[in-house]
Amino acid sequence: MATNPPKQQTFDRSIIEGPIGGAVWRLAWPTMLQNVIAGLQGIIDHAMVGHFVGYTANAAIGVSWQIILVVIVFISSLFTGMAVLVARFAGANEPAKVNKVVYQAFLTAFGLSIILAAVGYFASPSLLVLVNAEPAVQKEALPFLRAMFMGIFGMMMFFMLSGAFRAAGDPRTPLRLGVTMTVLTIAFNVILIPMFGTIGAALGTIASSTTVAIYGLWKITRPDAVIHFERGMDKKPDFTIIRSLFRFGLPTGVQGIAMNIGGVLLLRFIGSLQHSAAAQAAYAVGYTELFSLITWTSVGLMGASATIAGQNLGAGNPERAVQGVRVASRYGLGVAVVIGAMFLAIPGYLLAVFGMTDPLVLDLGRQLLAFLSVSGLFITVALSYTGGLQGTGDTRSPLYISIISQVVIPLGLCTVFQALYGLDAFHIWTAIVIGHATRATLSVLRFRQGKWRGIAVDIEPARP
Image 1: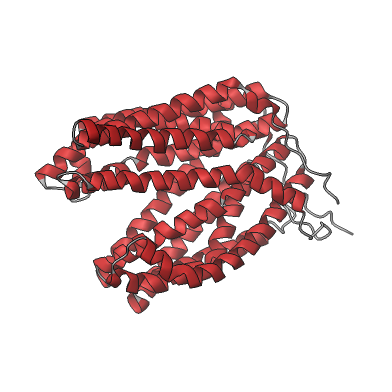
Image 2: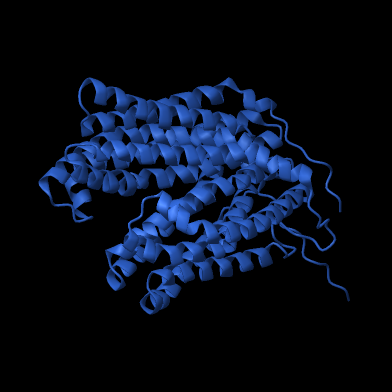
């Protein structure tokens, strides 16, 4: 007796109907947890190479990742475009279109990973010169960077698969993929770093990401997956869809690059201070590490807002999209209030975790954390509403808002303060807060305008 083949898993309809608070939380918490675990992996990697190779290896990995992240942020922007289309079609309950969009994103990512491997290998020496890496650092960084470019396929697939499943309303699969990749990376690096030094960290990352990518691609060939590549589907490139991926995604890539450039230029202002080393140490720990306790949560809520907004707009329910974004921002504010209170109440203990004992560094660190306790309220609102805009297809507005609030305003204020008063750390921290407040205000105002309601997202009817 013949058995019926398993059916494709249906989309989670609680995203477009039922209690909105629960839907937002179910989408957000897996990404929050994944971000925390990934952050711990980076700390472990740096600790290991620092122990087995030395601080030069830490610098080499840090410089290399600055280059890799700029490339990944830009190229991965097409996955934002993919998420816009996937969320809209999932909300409209059109699985064939979801599958077709994800397949075209896969083809595009595969082609780009081949191009990046070739270009990155030969461009690595010039890129390291461009970031002013010292000769000793370049010696350690060059093989690491070349290896990362050659093995970038796995990371590209990981980001693509995570974005696709999350936009389709399945945040747990990206969590499983992320946790597996982190555990495998740590396991590989424990073996490879003592054997091969700095490049061992690259080999461990490549091995883990490629393994997870292969598993993820196998998973979407399974008929019970929420995203499914069918045997009979059209396998040829569809340039109409590919153009849509870049049309919606490229503004996000440019936004990421602009913000990275803004961050580098802000570091130049910090480096011009009288006590620049102390200020840079306070900034590295306070802003890069401790402030991430808020941004990890906010990034998860941004993804939840994008999926909620996109799917509900696809389902013809824009008012529920508005409710979902508001709920996400309230969750974020709750977390920001708690962590901000810690910044104000126990800054010394938080800084001591990172071994900061110098009195000058502690004073600057406490001062910065006081400013960041306010900034956290703004950044979590900004990211929640950014997700709402991007999820509905309005990816240009966050680009313009980010350039104004994260580049023009803070750098402009630092320039003015430097010219009028002589720059002090207090002025830089003030510029950061004003930039975040501007981003939150403009994001909320743009979302409330409601122009995203009329953004059309469609492709040709998917062929069976």
